[in-house]
Structure formats: C-alpha cells, structure tokens
Amino acid sequence: MRNLNGKIDAMKRWQFWLGVVISIALLAWALHNQPLVDIWQALKTAHYLWVIPGIAVYFVAVWARSWRWHYLLRPVKNVPTLAMFPVVCIGYFGNNVLPARAGEVVRAVVLKRREGVPVSASLATVIIERIFDGVVMLGFVFLNLPEVAKLNGTSGFLGSIESLAIWGAVIFFGVLLVFILAAMFPEKAENIIYAVGNKILPLKWREKTFPLVHKFLSGLESLRSPKDALMVFLTSVVIWLLETGKYWLVMHAFDFQVSFFALMLMNGIVNLATTIPSAPGYIGTFDAPGIAVLTAYGVEPGIATGYTLVLHAALWLPITVLGAIYFAREGIKWDKALQEAKTEPVPSGTT
Image (tube, rainbow, N blue to C red; front, side):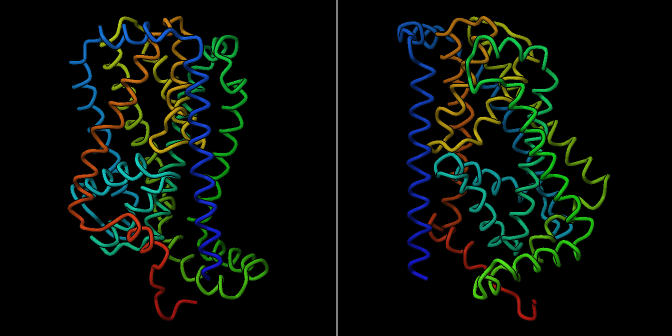
C-alpha cells in the first residue's frame, strides 16, 4: 500500500511540474515580442474603479453557483444556498492555490464535515457542474463561429479553434449523455460498472471501489428529471453570462471596446483552455488565449495584455481571499482534507 501511495504522490508531482512548464511556455508565447513599456502604459493609465462593480457581479455569479449546487444535491440532502456559499468559496480557494483542481475535492470534504453529505455523491454533482459549464462554454464559442475565422488566421493559438470546439462538443455532450443514462437507469449502470470492475480490478480495489459506486450514482439523481436538467443548464448559462459581465465591466477600465459577444467568445475559449494542465491559478492557460482573442479583434497587444492580466487578477484574488478566510474557520489542513476524501467510510451492508 505504501508503494501505491508513493507512486500516486510521484504522479501528482509529475503533473504539477508539467503544469508549471506549460504555464511558463504559454506565458512566454503570449508575451514574446511585446514591449514591456506598452503593457506598463496600459496598466498605468487604467481606470481601476471599473474593477469594483466587476467583482460585485462576479460574486453574484458565485452565489448562483451555490444555488446550482444546492439544486443538484437536493436528492441527497437539501442544503440551503446560504450554507453552500462558503463551501463554494473554499473550492475556489483550493482550485486557485492547489494543482489539478484539488479544491473540488476539498469542498466535497468540507460539505461532508458540515452536512454529512458523502464525498462521492458531492463529487458526482461537481462533475455534473463541470460538464454543464463545458457545454455552455462551447455554446459561447459556437454562437460566435463567424468571428472564430478571425482567430484562425491571426492568433495561431492551438491551431483551428473551430476544430477544437467541434471535438470539445463531441466529448462534453458524449459524457453528459453517459451521465444522463446512468441517472435514468441507475441499476443497469451499477451492474455494468460491477461487471467491468470484476474483470479489470483486483479484489482489494473492488472492495473499496464498489461500495462508493452507489453513493456516486445517487449524486446523479438530479439528471433523472428533464425539468431539473434544464434548470441546471439555464442556471449555468446565467452564471457564465454574469461572469462575461465582469469581463465587460473591467474592459471599461482600458482604452478599447469590443462587443459583449466578443467577450463571450473570449470567456468560452479561455475557460476551455484552463482544462489544460497548468500551474495553480491557471497561469498561462487563461492569459495566452485571452490575449490572442483580443489581438485578433484588433486590440493593441499591450492593452490586450494589460487587460487580461488585470482581469485574471480580479477573478483570482477576491474569491481566493474570501475562500481562505472561510477555510481557516474550518480548522483543517489541506493534507487532512484530501486524506479524508481518500478514506471515506464504507457503509455496512453495501455490496
């Protein structure tokens, strides 16, 4: 067992350093041939008061995320949105300072400590959130496909954005379909998982994995109703429109103007790009595509870079500070929280 844990820790370290290398490479690519004096001029002359309403709108979006998580978890336990909000902030804090989106696991552990919701059920709803987020982000890109041609010719970022969006749609909609089918037919899904697991997993792994399958599938119950699935989708659209509103407000701090639809496209592309491994805080994976989108729209590179860096900081800093405060009040440490997720107790009588 120690050998296995050692291999997992080594893999995590490898993933962390891979993310750091990718972040450095993307930042170098985004900033190459850009005079620092132009970036400094854009930062020096910005009207930062516009960032304040942008942050306020962003926290409305975080509240909407808290309501969405409350809605997804209702079949497991009805936790009020007010109780969800600090936990969601803790998740942001973890994602922003830890690699591999570990904040998602931390918030599931905190919710279990507060409300007794099984970690596996929470993580199932978190995955649903990420899938719906991905679908909405792809929707933002597809809605602006006529504009995407501008990126293909000028940005050079990740080759053809149109092809990337199509493959992304296939992946996200495919996973969403699998989850919906698993939610609608939980017994069949459980039987299939057991049958596959019995063939490919060692006995000691089956003893730990199978009891968690039922709890994980219980977290998918909100997808059984088309009405509930539609509500989750519409809430996800509202969340990302609010976040685009922050992009729009912060834009007014700088000397350029693009349409709200252009910022929707930017929002979709940068958030899809942040699924790529990176250093904590999505360094590089957020900035490089953001700068590329704006320069493709004719924004001066120095201004595009200054705006993207300020926007990234405004997205990162306030929610991270608030999440850190909430996490400190919980009185636990990162390693203990992550360890709790690994050692979730198995209910007796589960087969």
